[in-house]
Length: 389
Image (cartoon, rainbow, N blue to C red):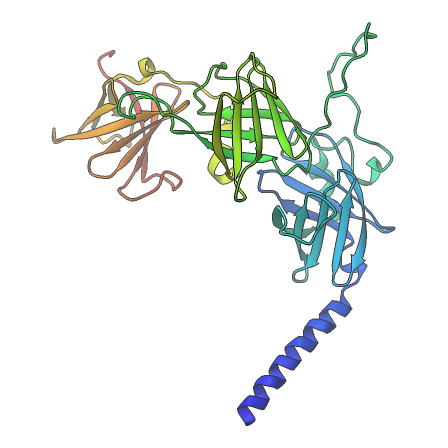
């Protein structure tokens, strides 16, 4: 009996503590600046102000826009309704952090489309974060909509005919971020061709980019996208179109349209799409001017040079084959796959080489058997062509 009573007493104390915590939460626990690391790879700075108003801008993105909304405290949480239609629910999580749950509408009874941690931000740091992202500081932008033209943008002449207003930037869309879509790898027996998947990045500014995609557009094609009726409409500079929309069983589907097709036509191809992350796909989009490689760029004989060179040579042949010769003249067979801006060689002993373009040849990153390419390489060397091959 004493043990039974002790358990009930402990549960009662815990429940009472939760009630006290809920009653102790007030608007002061939420007011101020908060920083949120978004899954799309950028950072959101939120200012929860007195008087039931709040605003937000993003750093690490190409949009200068600031969004606004209103808030009210509901029990132990703060419910923020943004002018875009998105609703955020904030709950206190520790002394200096909140949990933010985001919903596409005012209905917050279901599962949020995103959940993230918000950390309290020193107001003195806001100015440095806003530099180059927002038009001005958050407080100074309350009376501005952020619709000023970009620096250096030429003024348009008076139009002769009415122009269609472009869709607004999808700042808080569920589709913002990275996506991975399967595709045919091509090549011979799966080697020497492209990737068996490509990545899509939809930015908050309405810009769309792809990496590793095998398609009819040029390698550096850039598109524009907007959200309409719960789907993401993407139009590329060469005229092709894509549609990203909810599929069955909480999945998403990616529909492709040719240059001659309209949105109401049957799509040329339908594939499954899955969310990716900045940690997985960000390097494919944030490396500056991507160099697109061809088989001619990598085929031939290569040797390691420099202080860290291990006197190895690598022969890269057509059809995805490679041979590595060590200082002891022992040979190791491998198979290679070419991506847009790097090459991966899988050796028969389980090790891998990742080759990236360098100033003189290739930078070779060596990975031991069982080590994923997302980990730091065990060594790094310079590869140059041997005998002018």
